[in-house]
Image (cartoon, rainbow, N blue to C red; front, side):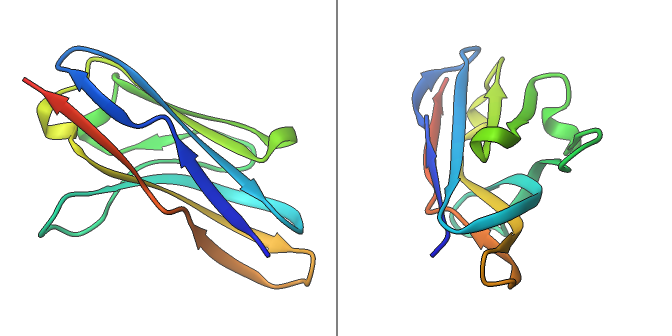
Length: 120
């Protein structure tokens, strides 16, 4: 059974920083792409940042220059360093990964989400 578990959310003042982590555990053969999404009530889930197993990351325009996604393949972990946070960054942040499980199945997995609240 594969699980993605996020941590690192919380309450921070505008201009502050947070670092989110997401660890994938279980019977995993290989993790391909890893991503961070965010969602606010009443809106669609938004892709914030994505990073392939090897190669360059991509970001939504609103976070470029402020957020950095990185990963540690040995630890099956993806990070999201968020600097210069703004109130509009307030959302539930979700980790997503597409991976090959030990069973051979290939599918997308989601974490349970972690709340980020930025006060003005």
